[in-house]
Amino acid sequence: MSSQAEPAAQSAAIGAAFADDAEAQARFLAHKRYLAWRRRLLPVGAVLLFLLLWWQAVERFDIKPFIAPSPVAVAQVLYERFDMLMSNLLPTAIEAVCGFLLGNFAAICLATAFVWRKTMEEALFPIAVMVNTIPVVAKAPILVLLLGNGMEPKIAIAAIICFFPTLVNMTRGLRDVRSEQLELMRVLSATPSEVFFRIRVPNALPYLFSALKIAASTAVIGAIVGEWIGSTRGIGALIIQSTYNFDSPLLYATIVVGSTFSALFFGVISVIERRTLRWNVGHNA
Image: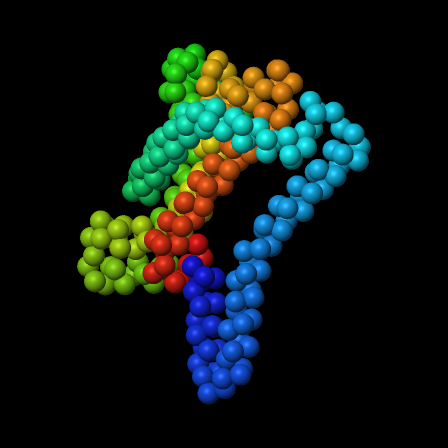
């Protein structure tokens, strides 16, 4: 959080220094507005440039539509088949969000147990590492066989993908506490529960949110991969169907919808992080 707090503090200090110089203060505020607009417009400009290069490449090299459609064709599919795309996004979104919540909740609980009992970490962490090393495409058919062909295996895949990064980050955050803080709590005769909730948990929040932002994207990937096996609805199933039918515009439109949802999910977690960690000036979020 220090990287977020320091610019605000610097801006306030500079503004105070220019308080008696109206012209300098106006220049400073104009430059600040310019930087804010630049941060907003640069990503938009980069996306527009990418679309322009994509369109030019398709037109100039006469690439067949079933190989790589033009952005115009993809936009047309997004407009004409919007309802169908949204109806397929809904189950994927439910699976991703449920897997995100389940996987991260399990990881937080296990990380807490690791901090309280070192023997649990020594026994269970190698198993978590082993499960994490198994490729997602190998886990998916096993979970479909175990849990059936409904939403359950897709939620389980999304949960497993989210689990390990959060487990590692949360365990480190709960343990990576300055010795001075622990010594102060001992001097104050704090109980282990007070040390945990007043020192360890606040210290772990930046680590946790770093993992949650990663998990927000990977949960969507897990749900989509799970839908590749035996599903008839969802973004993953639509990707497989459009690939087999050589319907590239629909394939690209489906990918755009899935990516947009993943980016929005990431953005929601980022907003929650900024609001939650606003007080935690001593950490980088």
